[in-house]
Image (cartoon, rainbow, N blue to C red; front, side, top):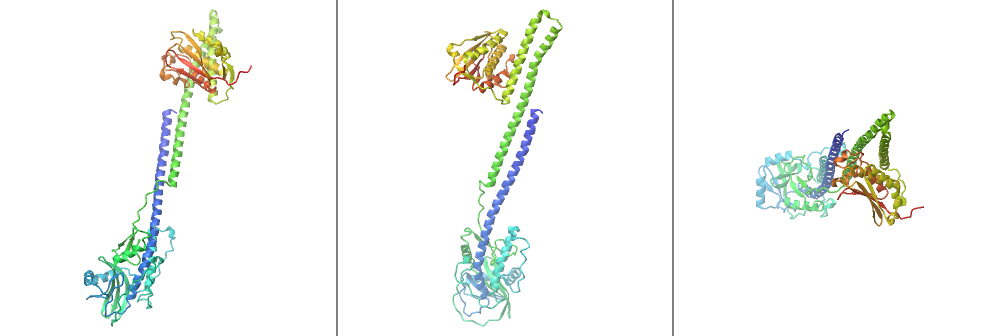
Length: 568
């Protein structure tokens, strides 16, 4: 498969993986945010539920007092209204009568707001706290588990429970139920479930009154901005309405004080619609809704889910990076394999052709007078093939990380004596000279090396010099020099040819790579010698480098000095 097709498939796969990961991340973050908001909302709803119970518990004694007051006899002298009440009144089609002391302007305000027919119609359409008929059985709320109900259904059920509790308390003191006196609670903390009572002022003598029969008791209504508790009754004079005008600012302040520790910024909003379906956060005692005024807190910047997502992304990105590196390595391996096959095939074709042609001529006796020359050519080509095979095998051995030969302690003189003669022969075959000179002190320096590897490296360097510098050198010679350092010895192989271009200084050490010079295309070789030589040098703890400045090419083989003396 071509590299472009491979990269296209890899890129497409990565885009799909990243898209799926991004989609999953977005959905999980949305789920986490929704879960956090639900938890916050559940806390708000729980605080609101407790606050509603407190407020209704505080308002129940007030309503009970007003219900009990319906059965009180009329007094000739009007008493002052109790705390939390602006006035009590009686309304018929003909008149509005105050049942408690009240200022004239307040009475005029109430009279301007009340219209008997409209009030009667609203009472018929409203839901009283206590009805004259027996209340039906409560609806079955156990059909669905509470945990599975939506928040709206929970609010509805909870409001129904509170309303039933209030009705039970009010029926006990209602003229429609038992006529037993109402034992109003004392002034105690309403957080225990009871609120303080309001004191009565003034005592007046009773006056005869007409008998009354109540049909509904305590129906709270908003008339303009006035909160009224109204009761319908039948008397000998006809239908009448008794009511209580509640002091809404004072009651609101008291109710908010009851829940200040739960919802410090809460508010109470009148419900003017009168709809029984709007029960979310509504009081069971009054048409008022509780507004918690609790802002949702910002989502935490760090959470277990986000930590898990970050870890997942890091793992995915690491896997993608590893996959890209693997694809790149695979493509490079394929390229190197193709380059190797091409180079080796090219290098084998020339000597094999020579072998075939010369052996045929020698076999048929066509060139008896040139027999010795052709045999020398065949030997040279055989040596060339042997060197090629040796380099390929050595490189394969290094690539497969096979164990290398243990280094030996050997003097510089002994090491060079083993290889100089071979190097000289290679230079003479290319019509070049090998220059080598070392003092006795330099020859006595002991190195810790693999002699075979050093011989192969030096031969590759001299072989390259004879290939690339022989035809273009002003001085057809190769110089072998020593450079002594405290911990190493440098062997310089220098020629006087065109040298190595600056941009090729590192490139030529890559496998199957040649210099960009024009001669590189015609010079035999697979481009493996320098790569193999550098790896062999590094295996011995040394280094192979090249100096690209100045005249010619100067390769330096650095070898470590031994820490022990050579064995005899």
